[in-house]
Length: 242
Length: 357
Image 1 (cartoon, helix red, strand yellow):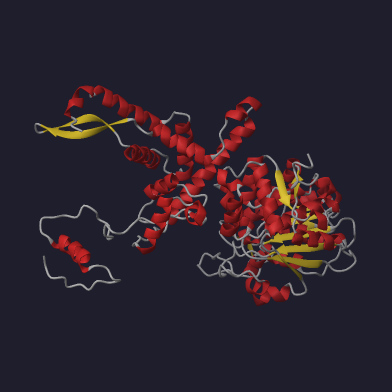
Image 2 (spheres, rainbow over the protein chains, first blue to last red):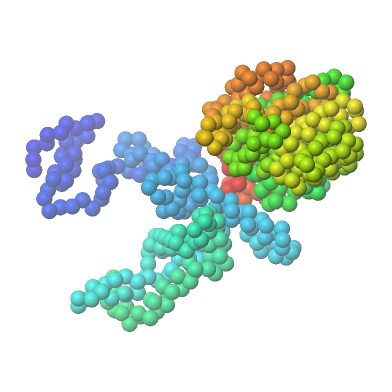
C-alpha cells in the first residue's frame, strides 16, 4: 500500500482514508458504487416526527441510534426531498422521470397541472352523476394516481438470456421497484408519443391516468401484452437460474 | 344550514346590507346573474372554479366593503370620484372590482366595464386608420367584442337612453337624433369598420347624459395603467404607436376624467398584463408613470392586501366544504400551517396550491 499522502481531517484514522484512496487507484478494479460518498456516510432522516419525540418515549435502540448519529458522517439530503406533509415519493419519482434536460420546474408544473386536470374532470363527472353513482366516483387525484400506476404494473416480465449464441426472452418474476419503474415508464412513453401534436401533456396524462384507474386504455393493454408474451414463452422458463 | 355553512352568507339579495360583521364570509352570486352582469371581466381561474363547483362565491373583504360604503354615500351632484384599487399580484383587485360591479348592477346602475385595458394596447391584429380623425387608429376586433358584451350587460338601458345628436356613418347610413342608443350599438356590431367610432359615441353620450340624472353611471376599468404606458403595436413601417394615437384609448381617457357627475369611477392597476413595467411594481406612481398619475390626480387609493388570518381560515373552510382540498393531510393543522407558509396568505397563490392538493 502506498504511503498515505493525505492528512486525516476531523480526527479520522488515517488508515480508513488511505484504504479508500488505495482501492480507487488499484488497476483492474471498478467501483461498484458511483456516489462520491464513502461507505461510512449514512443516509439522512427527513421526517419531523422522528426528531420531535420526547426523550422518555424513545426505545433503547432508537436512543443508541440517535447518539450514534451525533458523531457519524451523514450525506446531504437532496434538494427535492422535503419534510412537507404533502410530499409523496411516488409523485417525486414520476416527476423526475418526466423531467427533460434537468428542467425540474417545468416537470413539476406539468405534474401539478395534471393533478388539477384529473380533479376537475372528476368533479364534473360527480356533478353530472346521480346520487348512487356519486358515492363511487373518486375525486382525490393522489388516490387515482396511485391506483392507476398499481393497475399498470406487470406481474411478470421478460429478460433476454444468452444461450447457445442466441438471446431468448425468458419470463422472470420482477422485483417491486422494477415493476413500479416499468409502469411509470410505459405511462410517460405512451403520453409522449401517442398524442395529437397540439395536445398538451397534462391533458393527455390525466386522460391516461383516468383510463388506467378504470383498468382500460393503452397502458393496461401493454401490460396484458407483456403477460401474454410471458405466457407464450413459458417453455423457456428453465433458462432462468435464479 | 346556517350552522353547517358557517362561511356562507345568505344570498346576494341582501348584499346591500353587507357591513363590517360580514367580513371574511362568502356570498353567493346566482349563475344567471353571472351571465348577464359579467359576460366579460372575471379572471379566467375564477371562471374555471365557478364551472367546477357549479356555483359562484365571492369573499367579502375590507377593500370591497370600503368601496361599497363610499358608493352608497356618493353625492351625485359632485363630480365623479375616482377610486383606484392597487396591490401586489394575486391579492384580489379584479375580484373586488367584480364585487363592486355586481353590487351596482343590483342597484340598477349603468355599468361601463372594460375587462382589461391591456388587451387594447397589445396583440391587435386589424389596425385601421380612423375615418373620423386621420391621425388615429381604429381597432375593429376589440371594439366589436366590447360592444357585444356591453349590450348583454345593459340591455334595458339601450332602449331608454336617446342619442342627442345626429351621426352620419357613411353615404348611406346615419343615426338620427332621438333614436335609442341600441341603434348605435347595432350599427357598430353590423358594420365592424365603424365599431370604434360607435364605442366613442356611446361613451360620449353616456357621459353627457349621466349629468341629467336618469341613471347612475359606473365606469369600471381593469388595468387602467395601460392607457398611459406604451403599446406594443406597430405601423406598417414598423414604427411604434403611442397610446394617444389609438381612438379607443383616447375615448377612455376622456371618460376617466372627472368632469362629469352622476356616478363613480372605479379603476384597478395591474402589472400582470402591463408592458415594459418591472414585475415587482405595484404602487400607483410606478405603474401609471408621471403622465398617468397627473391625469388621474385627485383619486382615492385603496390598498388590496393578502388575506388576514380570519380570511385565510374562511377560504380554507370554503374549499373544505366544497371538497376541493382532497389530500388527507390538508385537513390537519400541520397542513393548514404549511399552506399558510407556502402561499404567504396570497389569495392567488393559495388558489393555485389548493388546485392540485
